[in-house]
Image 1 (spheres, rainbow, N blue to C red):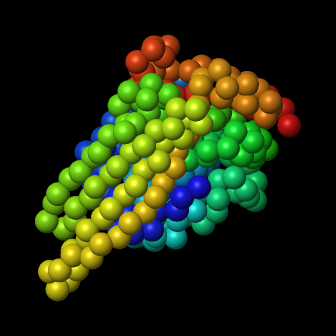
Image 2 (image 1 turned 135 degrees about the vertical axis):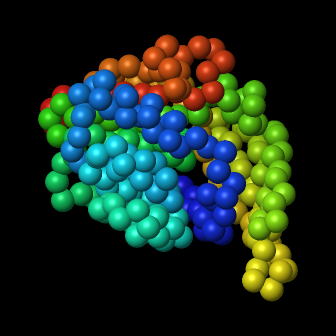
Length: 250
């Protein structure tokens, strides 16, 4: 699973089109709909802490887990600015450890798609089940097969800004359901010159039926699957879906 390195420095710059507040309201609505009004919540793949901060604003006691030192450094800077009491842990979600259980676990912005092996995804689900309070809730999103096949796959995304520019090349391997992102960054230095960086990331597309089976195998009960930012069932052209699962006993 790739760890954001150079991209962490400009991640928030290029993600400023993501409506985190709006996404956060949707996520909080799901938490409350399924009985989590407050308490301790774990975010897996928290990145620079954008969503962690939003959930903290909404009154949740937050723990953020990510495997990128660079991303967590930025999250810590945001924590200092906001004054929120957030615990950040440098851990791989495939083997994360907590000192106790939490009311809910969340993971958004397709962090789960970075788990490209289904046995490893199953292990993440088992760990989530282990660290949830009795009856606790697990909410996560996934980019869909449709999105990789029809929208992202074999496309090139580029953006040019004064501080930094990027070229994001995508290749989707349909048989393995793996999308490769080749990311080229040009980041402006203090002397005005630009330095080039390259990173490669991999994400996997998962069928809803497979994810549902893995959740059940991990001991979690699937409560619902929604087309992202709605309360509707996913359609053939859904690009992102949200899963809600519940702990039912260790």
